[in-house]
Length: 317
Ligand SMILES: Cc1cc2nc3c(=O)[nH]c(=O)nc-3n(C[C@H](O)[C@H](O)[C@H](O)COP(=O)(O)O)c2cc1C
Image: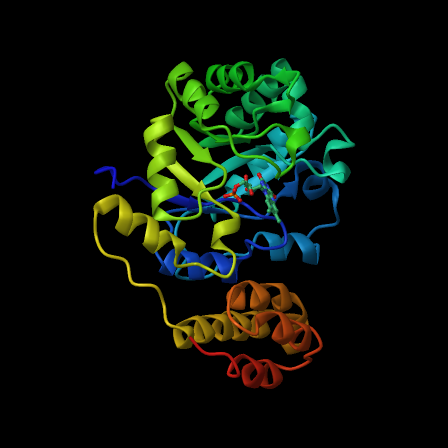
């Protein structure tokens, strides 16, 4: 226990943090979430009302504060996208992606490739800030590689350009998700800027949340992978930070939550698509349970919610 409760956010995850999953996380103590990333240029140049963007930007009643995350390279697209997203009056803020390591994103100089050019990072933030009344935040890594750790420069450039806060994932781009997030380094960034810093990377329990807070002195935490199949992680972390007891959900609760997520997906996207998109979530919900491996294979062949419902009921606590 650290004696210090702080906001705990759901980190953006493309293909995962849609409105249905976010709402579940909010119900379990998440304090803020981000859309999946949206190309600033794509959004500004795609034919209007393109289905993909409608889906990415959808917010459900009952969600808490949601920030729209945009990626790109040219400041002018960030300026335009920040303006248009603000006019939608849906979002609590605009977040700029300077962390995505995927080749298809960095290949165009976007995402974590921006970390190689702190001056450009500053100009991007400035362009967004000038075109919105919403807070602009930046999500960054430590740099491009061990030989190019630029997080200090990028954090300062973002602050000078008017960013309201930053999230630091304690890895370089060339680490992707390997190794351990460098908490010392996140702490050094926190000490170097005045704006709030959110710490991210490998927080997967109440204890690791406290360790992250104590090592970095950060203002808030962001949790990504540990929320997969486990929206209760936010309750667990808050309970731990407050020194309260945390009760793990029973398998019946886990199953009911997984099925509710699937039903809400089905209402939104139709049953067939929902079952396909939910396969990965089901396997996260049942991970670490006896018999999960065999069940996963069968769930991955299921075509209807009824089939999934009966398969899930084969496991127990
Ligand atoms: C499948 C997946 C998709 C991700 N998509 C995004 C994204 O769209 N934008 C972003 O800023 N970070 C993205 N991330 C990075 C996470 O937000 C987070 O920084 C990273 O997973 C480290 O946190 P964790 O250890 O709590 O998972 C993604 C991560 C994963 C695993």
